[in-house]
Image (tube, rainbow, N blue to C red; front, top):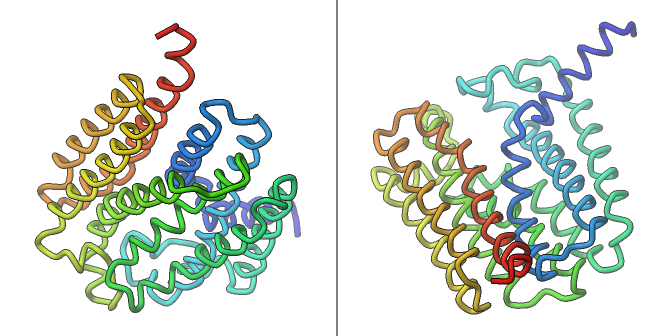
Length: 295
């Protein structure tokens, strides 16, 4: 294999892992960081930050590979996915499965420094990542399952940082499930016509003509749960300022999805990075900046 061929092969693997599309990694990373900062009162150990950041990248990449393996017979019939490496036949099924295994092993090795506290949760996280793609065959709201899979870094972060998983972790996970329902329904609205034709089940199909209302309701529930967390922890202007910014971002998403335009729905999905960042900024402002400013 010459250098040019190797470069082409690595580029295909990069696309299979979606390294060229970091939005998915960010949607996993923000709730994990919410949890790390809340669990440590704004003082997470730097090693934990690096472990969870790299672990999130590896597990998201593994999830993309197994998702494309599961959907390899469907993706060629969907406009947005027909050029994915497995769908286009530029990467073999065997290569994809080997890559998935390598990524899982790498994620396991990254987690070794905290494995004593989270080894059992790591197995659950792997199961969730591997099984999610298949829920689209039978589950009316696979996006809810995705919310658990994408948010499982939350209990893992609490376990690694504090040695236990309390009610706060599960409440935060609940908020993430509704957030995932919101943003991944926007994502599913892009492919609704294709999904109906090939028999894939999604929240966009389940909600039908109430899809926009459902998305905005999920944003509202997410913010309500996060607000209840802040109220219970007696947080102040920093935290709730972040939630107010996130609410404004959700309102902007309404303007993008209300006409159900494919491009607008996809823009709204991608823009959820800023929703997650706004919540995180509020947590940092509350736990790190306000004490520093003497407020």
